[in-house]
Length: 279
Image (cartoon, rainbow, N blue to C red):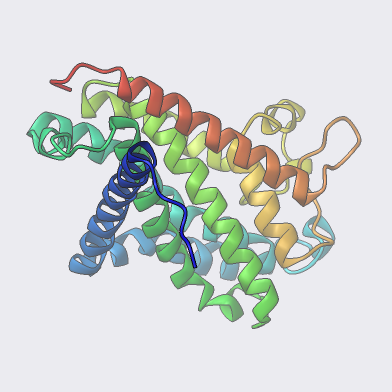
């Protein structure tokens, strides 16, 4: 049996690929270790969505008619609560990138032989993985959200959470690579996070909101993430995004959200790769 000889160029290419993958793996593992080492932070991040689930899901469920949301309000609210659970840890990746730049920690990471764009992708995947893990904790509370334990539905919700976390992390990094000071980034988050969440239909059906909110929802990535999660839990859910009088299918919404995430990550990686060595 003969084997085809490997050229030096092919060996160099394979070695370079392994180097890039090791860098990504190291960054993802770093975020996992950070998550495991600080469970208190995870509990605090999950506290707000849990309070919303108890306060709004329990208190308003008796006041909101089932016809307005296509069923129990708690079941309508639960996908929005899942999105809230991943929003904070996903966007905090951007803050961490900026603070690491100021503290010099990022400079230590950049001495690795991997490309800068690869390192940013590793940061994005690490943030996406940990945000999804934190959102998955709330999946164990599905009955409290008015949803049954159906493995296929829970798997679909987990996939939707991963996609939403990827999009949020990529968009946060895109903003972070264009921001020099953490205070500026925090101010930007304070001005945009709440309006994007409330304008996504996560808490109230879009059909019940002013018409201009319904129009802007078509450009709100959180609205697509909410719609994907809600229609995964209940295919007959009401109040989702509409283009004119047509409601796009979840597969198309997922494709658009994925395209947005990939575009944002590539743009951020390109900008990060062209930044000065001193960061």
